[in-house]
Image (cartoon, rainbow, N blue to C red; front, side, top):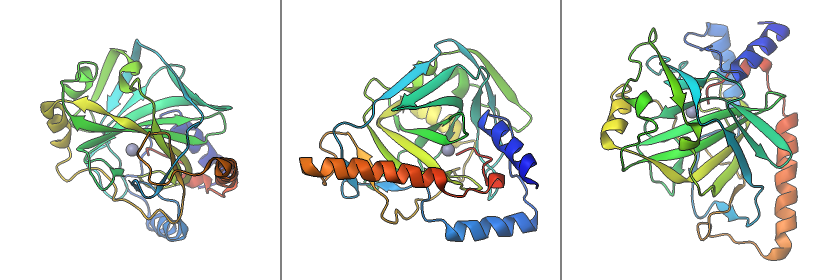
Length: 288
Ligand SMILES: [Zn+2]
């Protein structure tokens, strides 16, 4: 795969195109294995009271989401080493964005995993939603949200009552309110990680919202029955990466005021390193 072709693939993937690694040739599979062996900032992770640091003034999450947009829901097929899961592509590229500090990211798609990929103090929720955003330079940001069993979710029902059962099915949802995916309380956990599906590219910013999304048992079952063996990746080593949170009372580590500046400086440094980190363009096709 030459570089220009890979870059085109990367950009089209960021826009939500349907490109999958259903069957990588042997050489690519070997290269993926080699890359993985050298990677130390992988996702998902177990977020605990002991590995998170409380920061009161994290940059606010400013979501701009269309309340009446069209989705194309697809099923990528049964998960395996080189495949991903069902997802909803946002047809209008301007339908959703999130701004964090100086950076604005555009929503390309959202999808679900069962069971959850990130753990909260070792607890595994039945599902997890990932909203995949990218900025103008194709830097990826994923907003994750756990799904817990609870009330019937009316907003998501057009998707979960008609989930595509095969890779040839596409479900069109004409009027979807993206705001229904995001809670009022935007407290979160933030760290730098990777895609959780091949090619597991790093340099992905993660924002895991603390407030779970409620769905009924029947809705959760509608999804998990499509993937009886699950479609989630196991937790990865943290390798000393910091996790910052503004969830009151969650983190054991609460820094003294004078260390805030050091922490925030460290966060900026990590961000710079992540951006400069060499990422093979061929490894940028993503579903998170
Ligand atoms: Zn995902």
